[in-house]
Structures are given as C-alpha cells and as structure tokens.
Length: 172
Image 1 (tube, rainbow, N blue to C red):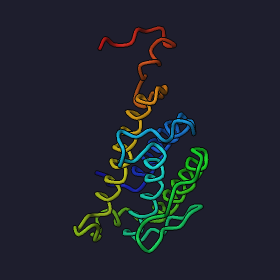
Image 2 (image 1 turned 180 degrees about the vertical axis):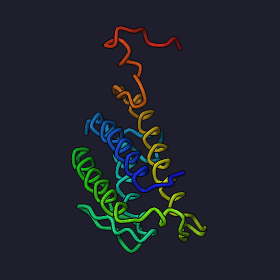
Image 3 (image 1 turned 90 degrees about the vertical axis):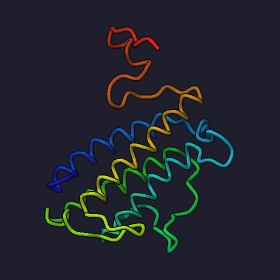
C-alpha cells in the first residue's frame, strides 16, 4: 500500500514503461488476437488500459486528460486502428495521471472515496490501478505468445531473452 504520493509515482512510472514495452511489441497484424470469440483482443485490452486511466482516477477527483475523453457511460469508444496510436494515447494519459496525482498531498492517500459500490482509500485505489494494469498486461503477453510474437522481458528475461545474456532458458 502506498504511504507517500512519490512512492506511487515511482512505481507507476516503472510499470508504465513496462506496459509501453509490451504495447510496442504488438504489430497491428496481430492486434486481433483474442483467446476466443467474444473476448477482448490485444487491441481492445490495450485500449482498456487507456480507458481505465481516465475512468478510475475520475472517481478520485483526478481529471486525467488525453487524446480521448471519458464519455458519460464511463467508456471512451472504439480503439484506434493502430497499436502506435493506442501506445501514444496510453503514454499521454499515463503522464497526465502522474501530473494530477502529483498535486495530491500524502494525506489524500488515507481519504475515503466511493468506487464501484465500495469505499476505498486513495492508496488502495492507486494500488488497484497498478494491479489492474499488471493483470491485463499479463493477459496480453499470453495472447502475444498465442499469436507467435516475442514477449519482451518485463521482470526479467522472457524465454527468448536468456540467450543474449549468455544463459540457457529455464527448462519447462
């Protein structure tokens, strides 16, 4: 749990960089990959991250801005056609989040907010934002594997990352 706003900002920047690494590894030709019909594909999962960075902070009084606006229904509409556009939108809303959260004092982390029918502290809401992104980023890496893409190393080398380090990939 975050006790200082600066701690969140540090973690968020590290996690945002990891997300941008994943988004940058998805070519437009593979963005349609989904686990099954009726489930989000890579493009929609990536766009959901953008959407969430506008929607969840809104409940905390943070007016995060980006190249798209949150609609009255809490959604931002269909994703743009290219992964580069989604990555650019993600970068913009992520930077705006950091700017807006940076205006908070540490005491805002202990303040209660109403989110999704529950009462969350500001610190908990920010932790959920990080965990939510990590969850969907993990889903994206599985879909990338199913599409035959190379998954970038996030918290250490991915399967293909061991060789350049002069090491053998762990046995499966």
